[in-house]
Length: 120
Image (cartoon, rainbow, N blue to C red):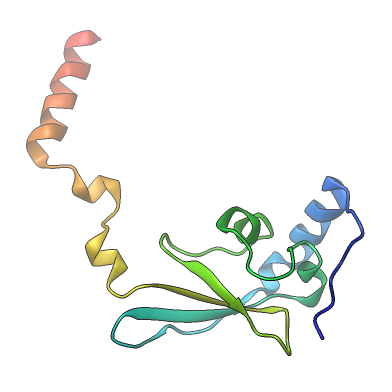
């Protein structure tokens, strides 16, 4: 049975816990099927109380110190161990969605630089 926390925590209590335990978050290697790549994240148990029951939003899981590249979505919590969060994202996400800096074409970057120099 999943433990549901109903106690409210102050922002200071939450920040202190994150500062203390964020370096202890464990990330699995990625594994995949034909459609998605997956990974699981094991939280230190004291951080679990800062997440809602069930699926957490990206802002919520990032807000307790989970750090991942873009595109990951939490899709499940391992019921026997609620500190284990399961994530997935579209396979080849990085190739399909390169960072903004890589998407800029060279001519556009040169145009911006010229405009910037002219306005100085």
